[in-house]
Amino acid sequence: MPLLICLFLILTACSDNLWYNQATPHVSIEVLTLSDTILTKDSVYFHAKINPSKDFVNKFYWTIDAKNYTIPRLEFWEKFDTSGVYNAAFYALDSLGDTLSAGLTITVSYEPVCDNLTYEDGSDGSTIFKWHCYDNDNNALTYKFVLKDKDKNTTLRIENFWKEDSLQHDDPLPSDWEAHITATNNYGFGTKDSVWLKN
Amino acid sequence: MVKKLILLITLTLGMANAAPILMLPLESDIDSNISVLWEKSIMQILKEAAFEPVKVEQEHFAQCESIECVISAARASGAQGLFRGRLKSESKDSVSIRLRIDWLAGHSNPQTDIQSVVPLAWDQVIKSGVILKLLSGITGKNADVEHTGDKKSVIYVETNPEHAVVMLNGTAACRSPCALSDSGSIAQIAAYWDLDGNMWAAKTIARLGSKDTAKIFLELKRSYAETQIRTNPDKALVFPAGILDTKSRAIGKTPYNLQGLPGETQVRLFHKGYNDTLLNVKIDALEKQIQFVQLTPITVPQKIFEQDLLVKSQNKRNIGLGLLGGSIAPLASGILLCVLAQDDYKKARDIKKELEYPSFGKKNYEAKIKENNKAVKDGNFKRGAGAGLIGLSLLLAGVGFTMSF
Image 1 (tube, chains in turn red, purple):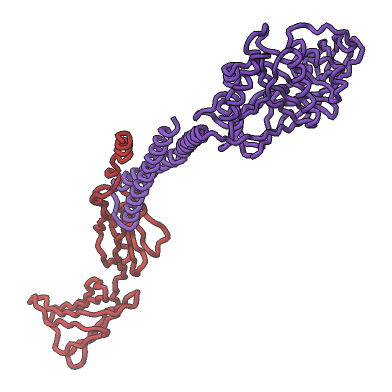
Image 2 (cartoon, rainbow over the protein chains, first blue to last red):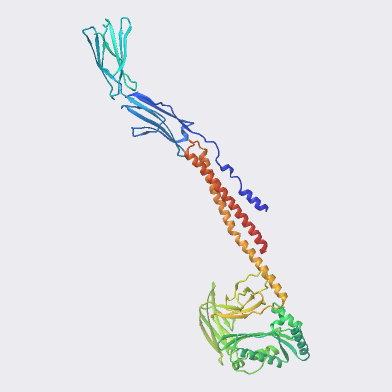
């Protein structure tokens, strides 16, 4: 009987320490780059972090759709030459084969252009301002027209409108006037200030 | 009891006139008429030698288990000697005889032992001189009679292969090539050669006649010397010769094929309800022999009781040995399960190490935890079952050991 008890005790030596019942030693990822809208030819700085350390993951990489490669780095600059909406995502794989990811969107847009600014004096003392503005992606444009008296440093007129390509000002213009037109697309990109000046 | 009283009276009366010699029945497997002729002739020779032969049955010595006991009982009853003999058929015209008188008192030799192979025909028996040998042995004097067959013949025996054991009339005599001498008219010559249990043998009957010398060449052939022991009733246990006790192990059951080197050996036969029988078995060099034994039922209640005790003790010992043997399988299984349990524990340990490494804690992580838990549970189950089996085997071994020894 003592032999049996001894044998039992030996054989039942703890298997408790083999159970895994601890808290998960956690690894997480953080993408520091925010979704944004940029002009063509601009660059975006993609930046991700792995907490507590990148040494705890087996593999990590960025992907930008529409580009046929993955970037196995935490941070890098990427230039966008073509307009469009780009989905970017950061992936990390841990030692057990699980994957975490986080994504963002980069919108790339062309800058609207205004050219061919002209004005005509009317017989009744009015002035007709004409312009030609366009967006390379054919996005709709909204305009802002500002007329100023340079001598008095005052703004004579401000107009916001869209789809127009001319504007008639009925009152006689001051001797030293200045007019501005800016066109803005729906991504918020606008032209540089285009100016009519008294000839 | 009545029979013993009659025997005692006979012996007492016999002692007044002549020395009584107890004669046990001849064991015989030849023609009963010839057996009776032998018996009567021996009785007549004893009478003429001033002895009083008294026939007794085996039952008179029912309490004896050995011949020594029978001899002691005979001596105690006042007999001067105890005669026993055996006639065994050797071939269709020869018989092997063994005649033995144990002298209990008043004789210069303790024993007269005649062993020979003689012709079956009685006139040839007389010519062979064996009767004179018996007479010499009884009287203690040489029978000085001219006999044409009395001169010893020399037999040269050669065999192929050489260095075989040569037997004369069933007794090993020399190794070939060798010379034998015999005074009989017929000699049975056998030779065998044994290597690692494989035997080659040959035998022949030499009729010596008036020739002084004879040359015999034996080509040995592959032999499977054995004697089949049959009993009535059958399924008697066959034990080696020796005292039968609880530790005795049977070597088989009848019908039993006893194999061995040619010659004589002894076995003990045991059957519940019947007297133990110590059997002299002769194994022929060449031919398979059959020896038949009629077992005699036990009539003494004390012997039946002792036999029951022996059987029960043997059964208990056999069960004990069975349990001892049966404990090996659960022991082996138990040990195997414990070893397999260690494999599960190793797996659990390895998974735990993996899990302790930082991770995202998602699907694969959850699956690994389940795998770890399952491995521990499997290991625990196997270890428990293994420990149980080992415990069972120890129990069986303990009980078996106690019952066996």
